[in-house]
Image 1 (cartoon, rainbow, N blue to C red):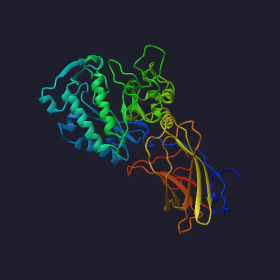
Image 2 (cartoon, helix red, strand yellow):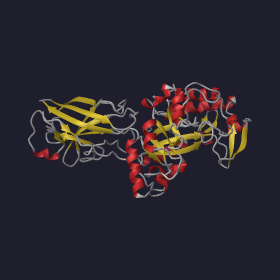
Image 3 (tube, rainbow, N blue to C red):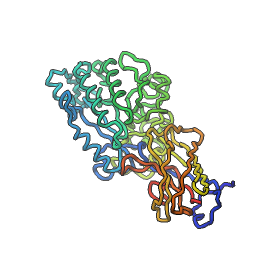
Length: 453
């Protein structure tokens, strides 16, 4: 069999019984592919023009708004957040906090009424007042375990949710009370929170702020939990510069050992671009001297998504916008269907595809795929579910082979276009698009593969 480029002018030609292998042309994937890319705060999207394409939105909620008693919860604030984000075809990244510099305490009222100790102190760096609870008070720890358990029972696997950052402990829920580290939760309390998340969530990814291998006096070991990480000083405190930057992300990964270094292979990595670098990090030469090489940070961390408010606050200049789009395409997964071989016998279609991951990370959710026959107007005339998997296809892996035998429908499909799509669990979710020139050519969300023999 000889090679050929994908050319849909073949649609009018009479195809032989054994069609030729089609080599599919590459094309850029979109910046708003699901479960990856840049993430705005949800209030930017509320304004109707977030200035940069995206499929995820982030927001915080205080625990006090959700937990009203030891076994009483009000989920309406979280429901409202998830529903407004889903209405835009996006998925949520959220974090629950107990203390947030400059805001009133997020400790549930019932715990305060029971005499929960809360320390008020001034954060000199932030120039804001913090209210840090006694994280090691048994009433607090039991309340956190109860909350996480009910949260998981209610929301694990909810298609409106993309990722959950563990939150709850520390300033902004970032698992530190710097510079008052004496007020932070003990490793014992941290372990109980980690165990509660591990037990409560099997599907929706939980991400932790700091990788920890061997437990120390400050942090509980977390590298062996089924949770990812989020680097919230991305491209500022990410790369190992060989100096005494022991809190930087890559040095922490190295210190935590192989389980942490290989975490990206099974659990997603997210984070936030350091606020001082917002927007400018996508310029050819970022102005801030602390800026690290963004592409190298992506390569080493295998990050899938990043909060980056600079690209959403205002419309970026053309060079910055195009730079951001190019970098987003390299984040997370980036799938390209490279070849299609479609054969036909009297009763079946024999389909053989190859697919590559051109990104830096795998796809972590087991979303279903389907094939379809499309007519000249892009209308689906027949569907075939397939049991192919997108998960565990790693960058630099050899092309994955997908094979299927499809029963021919009663209506003749010869001359129609065979197309592939990934089924988003959110009914109106933005479709996962392949890095193929023929993506969306005949129908939105479908990548056209070949003319059916």
